[in-house]
Image (cartoon, rainbow, N blue to C red):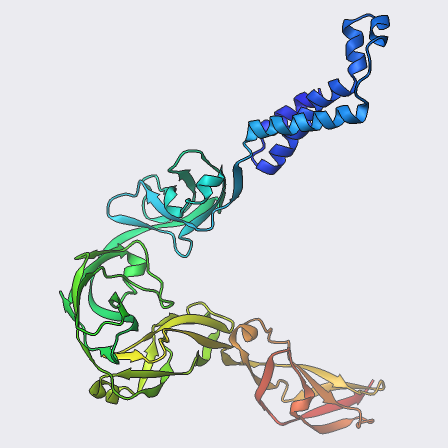
Amino acid sequence: MLSLITLIITAYITLPGLHLFAQVVLVILIVGWPLFFHQRWLNLFRGKAEVETVPRLLGPVALAIISVIISLVGVAFASGVSNRTGELPQGIPLTATNVPEGVSANFGSQTSARVIITASRESWAVLKAENFSAVVDVGNQGEGTYDLPILVTPKISNVKVIRVKPKRAIVTVEPVIRKTLPLVAKFSGSAGDELVPDEPIFEPEKLEVAGPKSIVNDLSSAVVQIKLSGETAAIRTKLAPVALTAAGEIIPGLSFSPAEVEVTVPLVKAGNRKTVGIKPIITGNPASGYWVKNLSVNPAVATVTGAPDALETVKEITTAPVSVAGLSTNTDLPSTLVLPSGITTADSLSKVTVKVEISSTETTKTVQPELIYDGLSSALKVTAVTPSSITLIISGAANTLNNTADNAAKLNLELGPYQSAGTYSVLIKNTHFTLPSGVGIVSFLPSAVNVTLENR
């Protein structure tokens, strides 16, 4: 019965390690027990007297060891000793299927899926992300945001997908729009003989990009990435344009027309080096109630070189725009440098970090504090306060003041010095107010009140 239960459980277990362990236990149960209890088995098929005449060649311990060895051999044949289970190092890019015409599927920041697979050790040596497809079936649904399963399928045999991480993807189906963009060059590496790239010439000078509305609306240019490798003559080549994020990563899901552009890059003699500041560029607005208090860049300066006339005009260089939309805490954002044509960094600096300091927005609010009578004699009572209310203007973060009730502020009138009935003028000071945390005083009126005391 135990063997049967174990077999049923392992049939539904996909984790190879646990499956292997269960198989070992199962074989030990089937093979080991009959060997260990061989005398009882012999009693079933022979007479008792005949059994006693059979020589006992192996003891229980030896039989147990043999059963374990037989178990391992059986499991090895069943599971394959050459298989390996693990997570594929590369993420598999997500693709959408059954997308209606005129719209596109946008996966946002989740553009790939990770998989745990089982494959032979020989296959592991050559497996790449291209050997798998990660598909999200949109099912011809209209515009909207959907939570859909991810289906990963191997393109080669003898590979089994054990688990997909994550199992589902958030997909936004939105209209495809087109936009005309100018072309800019992004250089990496360096030319030879102290040469630097001059103003590139593009043919055509502009192109058309098509893609999801939310992405295309934010694009201001298409980028041609040019890698310099010691060239000493003008560069003439055809390259595919791309769109880049602020961190310099290629934005997927876009199509360009034409798909390639002709680029001519003259190389000119570099002028003297020059150190200039780096100016951060931001887009978007922080979360409600917050503002950008300070911006800084690490590193703060860059050493640039280029043609003498181009170098003379450079006073600073900027970062690619980084978005601060929705931020409510200090954040470090990666970005790249935007270099003018004919200018390159002398130390191959291309990526920087924009440090964004966020602070809550200060605002004001008018409240009427609750009056507290401190030190009032037990023989007296307050019958009148003139004026009857105090106007208090407080300041603080917008979200803090929005959650501050009108009666949260307290005014403590010190009446201890007054021990007989009468009308007294009591001065009010800032220290007499008790305020919620994060709230300060701007002003208050009046600066004194008349308090009338009578005997109880």
